Amino acid sequence: TGSAYNFRARSSILGDIINSTPYHVSSTNGHTVEKEVLVYGANDGMVHIVDSADGDEIVAYIPSGVYDALGNYVKDDYIHQYSVDGGISAYSNGDDLISITGKTGTFARTTAVGRLGLGVKGLYAIDVSNAGTVNASMMKWEITTATTGFERLGYSTSSPTMVKLANGAAGVVFANGYNSSTGTGTNADAGSI
Image (cartoon, rainbow, N blue to C red; front, side, top):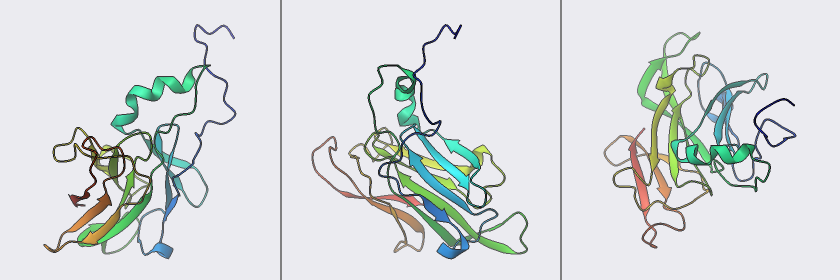
């Protein structure tokens, strides 16, 4: 009351999670990291990284393709929109060794890569090796239809696959998705991670 703004009442601060299955970045899944985390997308426009030990959110990332829709989430007449609900995978690259806070030696850098799903055509990559130390360098890259060479991206909730490419580099391979700008599908390679 008394506010100049009329925001929509919500029952939760977290948006709904429909197609994004949380990925557990942990030793169980073959990753040595400073802090084991859950990474998932939600239809509140964010990729959430949560401490798997206590459930506290460490950081949330808002992909650039979602910016224009953010104002819709607070409107009283809001109708559900997909935003960040794609599949997520992670890869520990043994050719990219780094120091991890609190551990002795060097370890493979671990990158979480996800699709933006049904609301936005794109992908993102986040370095989750030292998730206890949040900074801008965690964000490795983002691919949208504005990225040169990826203009034909479509919508997809499938998880990207990280593989060792023929040239020896680790790369991200993913399906184009549907409703691409050309109407034809292709498999794509996001290059090195």
